[in-house]
Length: 174
Image (cartoon, rainbow, N blue to C red; front, side):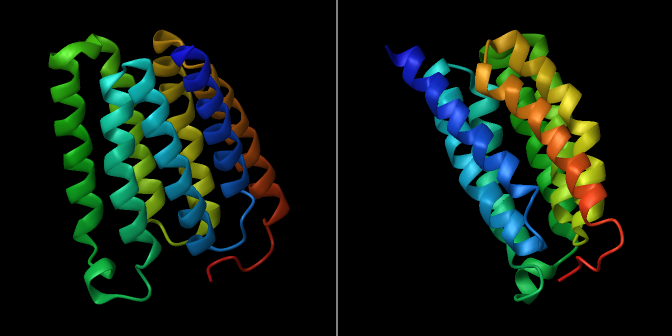
């Protein structure tokens, strides 16, 4: 029963992720990404997958900071990207050792790219970088049997492409 509930939460996370890439502004993308990270952290916790859980927990904090880059000097500090990339690598390494094994590297590298994309203020560039992270995260999801995660990566890539096309000639930097 826990696995079924975990997969349902994974599908809810997938839905919010898809919706995030249809948002017009960086702040609205980040807000929906916070919700997505919360849902995926719970999903992976219920599946017993350390890497997915702790890296999504770190992403919650990262996404909140990045959401307020233009409103707070603290959050605007450009060093946050480097700090969060290091945090993702350290936590991914810890999760490799503590149980997820070699496939933790796929999600860790995906989350580093995801961190870079979330630090970019231009939504079009966010969408482009996400296209690099999707195949890596998909591999982790496949190996961990995260149904919602696998569908999420396919839909996130499709949503990012749709957003790239939809907003290709519009100013979306607000």
